[in-house]
Image (cartoon, rainbow, N blue to C red; front, top):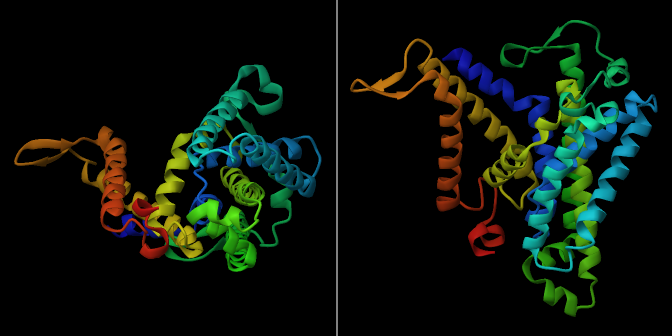
Length: 330
């Protein structure tokens, strides 16, 4: 049990959790504060990761690679937003989930092996990033949070980006611009009647949330050391949305804490079920309930059940305000 608890707590501060926190902050800007239904945050993560990896492999350097990823996320927002933001929000939802799948299939095609690496993806693009590592070789941390110098460096960068992204979005939402954005979420016709360009504000929100999602994809790639199409499937967006709902849709701190809680619980549940079925299937009164090969699907079922219970009894999430953001009352 101690090992299971250690694994779960160790997951709280991993670069992957930080990447999901950044992605959740981006969706919070889109959905939580503006009311834009983005079901394709994985598309921004994919664009950010691939643009960053391809630019580094082409020898452009770290800073140009980041700028290229930044530009790519803006272009993606324009492509998605121009035809949809004047329409109902469900059109954006359809376009974003379709765009995420289309982009994933494009980068995985064998015809682009020389550019995107095809199904195998790209690797070897993080050398310059790790060359900037200021930490000497060695082991750092304690108990559940033990890591080498590379792990420490990527964690420092990842969580620094999470803090900066959270502070930036929080400051934007407190500004006059943010009050307009929240007004659009509640009643865009009323905001339009006050002379505000609703379409322009929506586009700005889409771009900001997309840029934050782009950084999420970069961290995701740096943590794994490779970029592969299957790492940016529909499951990624589902996990991000679940974590966001868990923390609180319209709260920046919920966007950060939600993924930490989600991955901590996910790893605890997965490890616990694997320990339970390690030697023999888990049985009740002699009836086999869970076999070792069924741990993954059962864990998915538990996530779905937990999400159903959360939406039923606390739809605003752990940190959310029911008056401001009850999902069933929007």
